[in-house]
Amino acid sequence: MAKTVISIAAQNTFTDPLNCPRDSVLVVLNPTGGTGVGTVTTQIRDYTNPTSPGVWEDWDRRVVASGACQAFIIDVPVSNQQIRVGFKTGEYTSGTLTGRIQHS
Image 1 (tube, one colour):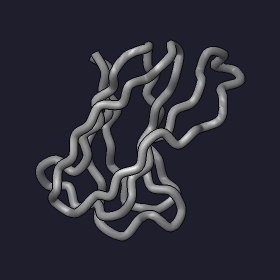
Image 2 (cartoon, rainbow, N blue to C red):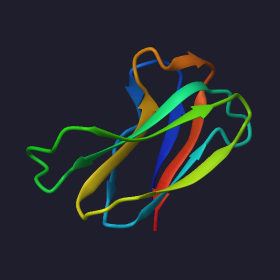
Image 3 (cartoon, one colour):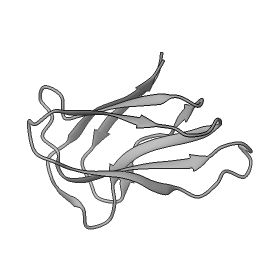
Image 4 (cartoon, rainbow, N blue to C red):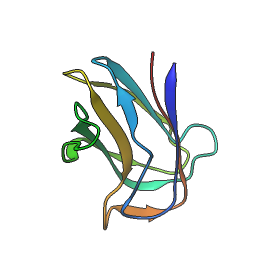
């Protein structure tokens, strides 16, 4: 199972990208102890050509609250994509967003 750990405490900050086959990806935000507050954006980009990857596209947005765990599935529609999670400029409020992105 491939995964990327989420630990973000600032605006305009994203996780390291996770390479995805065509698959469903599990995103878990603020599990036990997570204090992140704000609007979290999940982004996907084409990674068919690693020397020239595509631009990041907003795929999903969720409002998160301190201590409120959220888990959801993102369906990656085509092969050779990358996914990341983070706070865009002006969408971070406070705390540290924790969690993970993973696929089988």
